[in-house]
Amino acid sequence: MIIGRKAKLNEDLNQIENILSENNILDNIYENDILYVLEENSNIIGVCKIVNNRQIGILHYIIISKFFRSENFGDSLLRAAFNYCVRHGITKIYYPNGNNYLQKIGFVKISSLEVPSVIKEMASSDRGLICDLSKFFSKGCSSCKGR
Image (cartoon, rainbow, N blue to C red; front, side, top):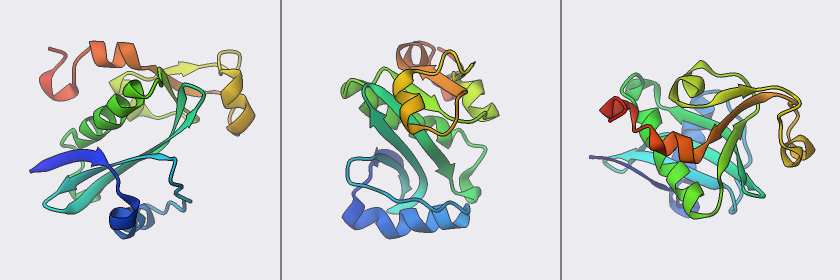
């Protein structure tokens, strides 16, 4: 069975670092990061990191192990992480780059004029993608085709 859950750093860190390493990502993980994992039979097959900045989450990455891609697991992992964000007062998620997959699931391009000031203070990019979580959850998941 595959489940999405909040990461337990003391138990999951080695597996998370392995997935990051396989995808050439170097990252510092902190206790206050919103870190979610997708797990199958006690093996972590995906990881998502969001940093909370004044009710706006900054998506740092979403990675699904190469052996599990193309099965909508990314959507499941994001939904688990975004649900946590909504429950903790985060209403929008910002991603500092372009990404076709994120646009397909509900992120929209924004210009430098639309980037929230709290994001400009900490992100190196002055444009990117943003997702309104109320709209994201109102359209249904990709596996149920919008129902």
